[in-house]
Image (spheres, helix red, strand yellow):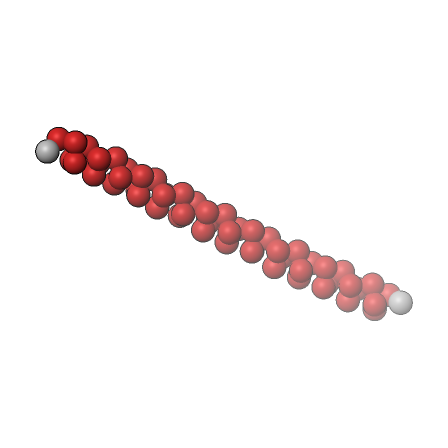
Length: 54
């Protein structure tokens, strides 16, 4: 019974570590996506300004 509890505890820790890494990876992807979105919006504004000034 004790061995089973140790295995469950180890598996639980491994699953949590995997979950934590996944969440951290998603956070990084979201940060990059937000930066890209901001750049695209900025380019759209610049294009609108250029079009209206012609």
